[in-house]
Image (tube, rainbow, N blue to C red; front, side):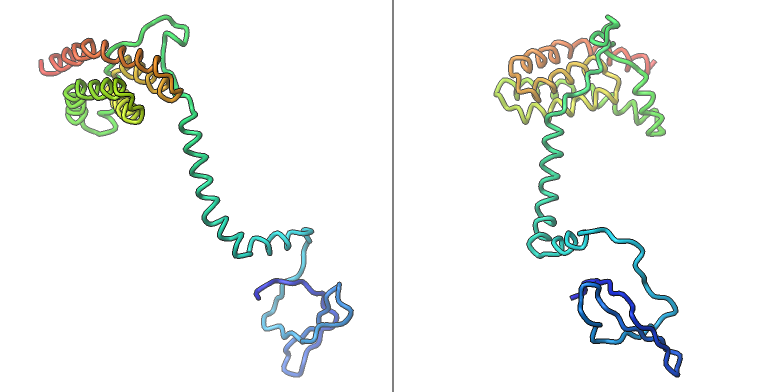
Length: 221
């Protein structure tokens, strides 16, 4: 049955052809084992140390029922744990005012967009991304507002995560900050705070559009 047992050598012999044979005996057995083993190689395994009861654990893990539980139950439990940790994790608040500096975040910061251009190895591609962000901004804000007004938290979470990520990439830091607050309120299932954060997102939209428009004008010039 492929189990590994360790028995002590009690007799070693070499026949006329030079083949070594051994007789063995288990320490817990009264007599020698009923077989003779031929040593086919120049070296044999030997016991180096013993870990008490480890073999029993290995045998238990080989049980078909235990194998099925480990094969299907353990991955499922891991997935559940990961999902729970994600939903319970508080979003990181990148807020200069809350950090104690007293300075509000800018509506638009060019540095993230410059970093994006380096990563994409194309300034033109980064500018197109910024233009697409500005074009989709009203639609994204409307989607968040509609989801909040209908109480659809899942849809609101999807929309705010999308806006938060793209805002971070383009350099819309204050919009990203408002999205982080809204995400936190949704995670905490605080509907009142979510509505307030969603209103901040909508109120900031015109200011951000103006900042992005000025950026586009300077680039065109």
